[in-house]
Image (tube, rainbow over all chains, first blue to last red; front, side, top):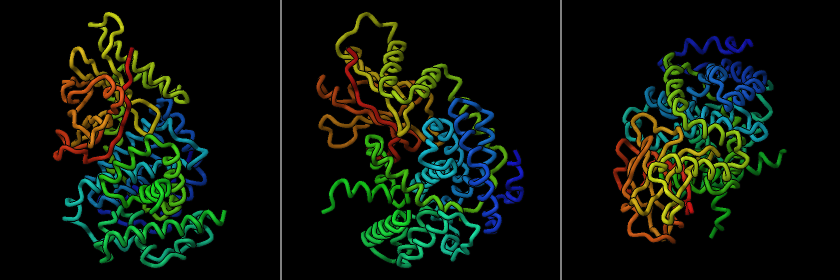
Amino acid sequence: MGCRGVCPDARSYGDGFEKVSRRKAKEFRFMDVRTDGALLVDLLRRTAEGDRNAFSRLYDLTKAKLFGVTRRILIRGDLAEEALQESYVRIWSNACRFDAGHASAMTWMIAIARNQAIDLRRKANERIAAQAVTLEDVALTAPDVSAEDSADYRRLRQCLGGLAADGRDMVLLAYHQGYSREELAQKFSRPVATVKTILRRSLAALKECLDGQR
Amino acid sequence: MASAEFEGRDDAAEYALGTLDAAQRSAFEARMARDPALAAEVAQWQQRLGALNEETPVLEPPPQMLANIMERIGGLARDNVVVLKRRADLWRRTAIAVSAIAASLLVFVMVRTEWQAPQKGLYVAVLQGSGTAPAFVAAVDVKSKVIVVRSLGASAPQRHSYELWALGAGRAAPQPLGVIDAVAHIPSGRLGDVGDTALADTTFAVSLEPPGGSPTGAPTGPVLFTGKLLAAN
């Protein structure tokens, strides 16, 4: 029940894309993923059956995280809203596809939001670039990984730490902010083909590191 | 040279990461729609990288957003063909069989006024995305020279159009058939001069495009739904 209380601070994050403190992001994630994971799965199941109340509840519990995702990738508020709306329409119509055995509910929904945002970013590229704010560094700030982070997160950060700096930064910029190979090539002043090689090498190393620790 | 399988896996990782450009993403999505192993590979990558979501800040969307979304999904449900879609959802384990049933039912509904007996020259396709629920049904009636496309609830997002394409049967590139919405009637002549074999070998695809369709004559947005034509008789 106490889900509405999960993220009381989120309400004050208005249009200005203020970054929440990492502590607050952690609190949200903690409640959401660990406490309410089963609730989200149940809400998704009911959404798949066409239960609008369950869907609306699901929206309330996840909207701030998903909007954070689309806004970071699309920078522009109107585009981020468009991607968010599309994401929930997709969640509504694809809820029957969600398989709790393969992904957490939050990971699945965020993947949908990221895909919507990245598709829109690719299409609206010049519009976004025209007013690109320098948000790049957000993703690259050295994280303060602590014992209260999930084991998955600590492991991923550890494996990322093992990558060459260029590769790690490219992966983070791509994941958090939707950079394409071309945009990374520009930012790192490297040929696109080199970026592709670095990305693939980094991802392969990441996979080996993560899967090797299972 | 990397094997096709290896290349596919690398693409899956980069697709999940998001570094492909629009055309590469569409092409990969079309492959993923046909290849469950590739889709599973992507899901694994989403799970691997998903821990990074813990770094994503939360941000409150505008309050009217929920109403907009509910209106959109309300539109999806008002149409009574959604009943068929719902059934298909329930039977998703046997999605292909159900799709065929849904297609024949809908084709029957669409053409019943002219329906006499099962005739030659009628082809149907059920267009699906990466999910199992059908999004569109399409029928090609060779005799009446028309392609009928009916949405099962899918509607293009604001400021976008869905565009229908023909693939396969020796076509070098996707052949544009036109913009579609809830119901579309398209002259079958746009398929070119094709015989029965070529029709049975044709796949329809729907891509997301700017309003009015692709400005280039080739798909510019993601391919969202695909379905192969089958002879109905």
